[in-house]
Length: 263
Image (cartoon, rainbow, N blue to C red; front, side, top):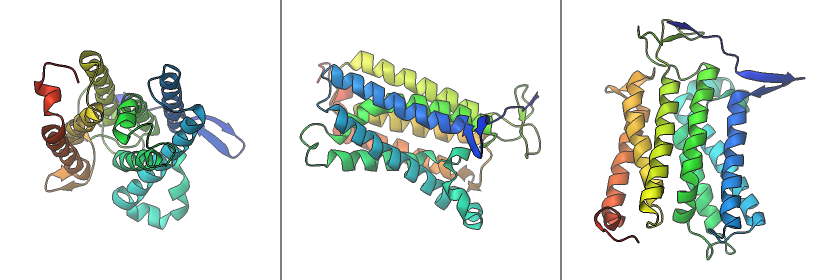
């Protein structure tokens, strides 16, 4: 049993708070920017730095709007409709992964549809470049959830349980389980990249989707959440992600698994 004595606020400047949660988002977008900038310099993608800046803006808007909208509409609608100003307080936490994923995919698709871009790079190619830094940033995001004392786990008596503020009982640090899962996914994606070397565009992205779905289904058993017929909304979405990945692999990527020749 461990006490919870973490402060989610790094510093306060006048009326403004600098929170670890918000810094994770800043770091994540900067990481994506510099990795893509490095790929441009190496000639791996046919974009220029101005187009990269435009894409990062698209991505930021897609992730922030998508993740917040999903949180407000599906996870905590009663709270946010009673406290509408808190909808805009994204630095305090409450950003849903599935909404952020949808927003990121939509933003990337819109960017790749631009007349000046569509002949340079595809959605699938860009998605493959994004998933490793995204998974790493998402892992840090779960650590920030832990520091915020949100998304707590179920009550347990394991030696590493925490007494989170405003929650009864000692609970699983499900946020840290989620962070570990995402760091493992980063390792798996890097290994696939090293082993396959070349693959049909989108292959790495769909591995990310499938692995995230499996992990969410398993770990939500340790997370305090509303259940519908024994499963959380996140688990149903996780099953959907896994099934969709399997279907996509069967239809589009059979040769990636069964062909001995690199594509």
